[in-house]
Amino acid sequence: MPTTVVRFNLVDPAATPASLSERYRAALEMAAYADDRGIATVQTEEHHGAENSWISSPFTFAGAVFGATQGHSAARSASLRGGGRETGGRIAVTVSAIIGPLHDPLRLAEDIAVLDLLSGGRLVTVAGIGYRPEEYEQSGVDWKRRGTLQDELLETLLAAWTGEPFTYRGRTVRITPRPFTQPHPMLLVGGSSKAAARRAARFGLPFFPSAHLPELEAYYTEQLAAHGTEGWTMMPAAVTPLLHIADDPDRTWAEHGEHFLHEARTYASWQSKDIRSAVKSAATTVAELRAEGVYRVLTPEECVAYAKGDVGSLVLHPLVGGMPVDEGWRSLHHFCENVLPRLKDK
Image: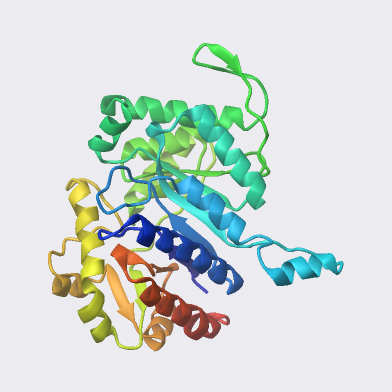
């Protein structure tokens, strides 16, 4: 069975504070529902200063998801009062990706350690360096030093999570508490460049290419040997569409296609031609976007057929581009009730 993922970036170009609060709370309810139905992962992201309210604080959101998916139900509480065993949540949260150089390394080490403890090891962090100079400018971070800062971040995280004193910027520091996961919480290096692959190999960390790049995976493997380290690659499949499930795809594209297009155009506008991404679109109209296949609206039957092919993961994106919450729920219900049960034996 393919890995199942529900993606949330909480974009809404028409948001008001009230409507955005509703969207965030709906995402938490969706995460709890997805956890109960056996979906493997919630994926979220990090961007800053976006006009469409793209999520900027993914670890805060991750903590809320963990709270919503661990010991949250009345039934579980009743089970505990009656002597039952609390199993907690199962769903992981993957932050893909953080913009590493924008974070204070010591504070990030603390935040991830606490989330790792709270979740029982369900946090996965992909550390990238980003591709928007304006985000660095907003945070007062030198764009030209991003590689050096990323190296410092990774080195600091790995030292901090040992719980032992270490030297940081010329002084001795110690970070506590130690995380739950040993030797450290799941940390991957993301990117689509040789520099990112070298960095991952040098630190002995897994590599998360931003697109299906077999040649970069081969280079990473070479660099592991050169540095005498061990690692592995988590690479997207050659085709990794963002999915929405509906009874009538034609109607969904007609009524909600602008939501898909808004996100696709925003994301594309941030990236240079050299940036490679599994979900980067060149479409400028809804019709072009539908034909392109980066975003796909499928019936439950079409999704089952698609999933039974050579598919690494199914990525549902229920609240894409400001999608109405009710429509997002319809998509998620279809996926969990009319698709997943038919894939159990795959």
